[in-house]
Image 1 (cartoon, rainbow, N blue to C red):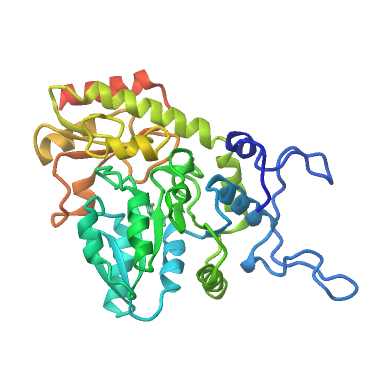
Image 2 (spheres, rainbow, N blue to C red; image 1 turned 180 degrees about the vertical axis):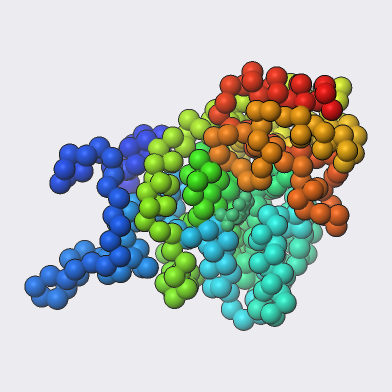
Length: 380
Ligand SMILES: *Cc1c(COP(=O)(O)O)cnc(C)c1O
């Protein structure tokens, strides 16, 4: 990738594009064509053939993300899980995967499915316990270490460099699901990761109106070529209009994420000693077990946090229902703040505490958000 002298805030705000040569437009055009004509010698005019393999709008979104992550190349998928599935599909038959015990439930479901089909084998570990991680990796057999940081919904921070060193010593590849951090907060390639994944449904698009995923690679290699083959043969590419919306959403990435992180820290500090709150889980608090690693690895601490209210299912449910500004919905990383009673979503056999409320902080007024939490806690 050619070097861009501009800082990420600048090239993202400009969507890597300044002025369209053909029209003078300062907004990138949306290319909807599914097919591309050949020239008089029957050669392709540019590299595009058919849009299942990519098109100029999809390419532009991918290039922005690759640069944001300081990676070599990026590939967009029709959902986050389609991207994760493509990466897993690059693994050899029966390959061993090490993954976190607590992880995004959809990825866990995908692995459960692949385990049932004997497509892979897997060991689940606590990724903050590096000795356990070392013990879980089988040199020569473990192909992939899959990590998420910060870890949803307790927001433990995984030391990416330490995990990368352990994975690489055993010949395994490290892939990091960096969805909850966003490239504004963490760039896993700076800490030794080989593959970065985002659900672009979350912070990258940021407006809760596009479903998609992206894989980014640090270097061009056989696994990356294989991942591209999987996307091509399964047709899992993101559509052009969604790619265009993503480009538009990313133009405000830095202001959205930095504002959410600032407000999240203010909320966390405000609620930390609240009489109705048992604890606040946010990596920006000194009391958080991941705080020291977070200070080294994160720029700001992101917009995701959880609070455990005093009481059980009933009290927690009342707090959620009393909120007026926070919307009672799942997902994260949008401009609107969301609050979710995780135990209700994950069910009885989940290890999530009954009294945990997961909060995705949006870009609304900080005072409105704090006042909303105050009234909900007081009335519940
Ligand atoms: C949402 C999410 C995914 C899955 O992405 P989809 O776009 O919903 O398919 C994966 N990992 C994390 C951390 C997520 O939050």
